[in-house]
Figure: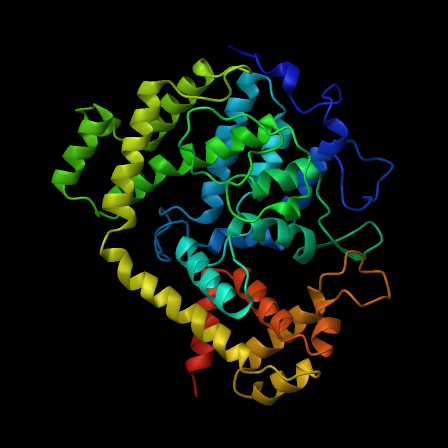
Length: 404
């Protein structure tokens, strides 16, 4: 029913409102600013470099020459659109869903989920922790990405708790047919694995479901465009969708049916949920995609390529570690890899993890930690550097490493 969630929306009358809009640090104010807290988050995200890089990051298919294969930024735009439609119908806060949707995949590495897998393997081996894009997204907005404030000083994004929570809680793999927000206000550092907690807000729950709705049909569309499905697989798919007309086999129809069903079957009491019929359909499409798309032999070659690129970049920079003198080791090989080393050195200086970059106390910065011989911190800085790369830039770095 329209506006049936209005009373639990993220707004000043919500008992959790003060927690939702809480920031790690106070955010500067302009006298003529007319934006809400979540609108400020949205524009801060829109203007940061991590958002801009999404247009050159793989979603599922690595196809740099095709303008019609989904990239990470297109996926983000789909999630924003779908979550806006659902939130608007249910009476939830669309400003919050827009901000969460825009930010939800900023922690993704180059080369999609394969890149994430490779970085996780390195992370577990060399640092003893895990890498997953939801947690890395919060790390990036909290510690990495910079914007100039009203005085021209560089500071981190400093987003509201509700948006940061939406990022780390957005894992799209939802198999249960009811989603409600958690009641606990927790330190987001308590997360140890994806999907450990439900989002803190109903709006975060909407984005979480929208993430699944957005990719389930779009990946099918790309597979058809790239001719990965033969006529037998297409016939099987049409049977799953219960359609006979080839023209109706498209993503907009799938999205429309899922959104309509979710809006009609959800309530504050039951949670966000699909009808049993639609949930079964969603599960069948997902099963079809895993069997016929994500495990397709054509993806094997590109996955091997991605692993080679990321591991070679990491090992090259790792070999430059010089205890106590971080730049000295890098300078020794700069003549061989001038562009890569110069960029990495600049990154180490600029993207330190200071919470206040106007503070002269550098004891929390990456540079300070490395100057004290913290080897694992150096490895972590390399992983952060790689995670922020676009596909094209990672390939350029790899090619420079190969050149004589």
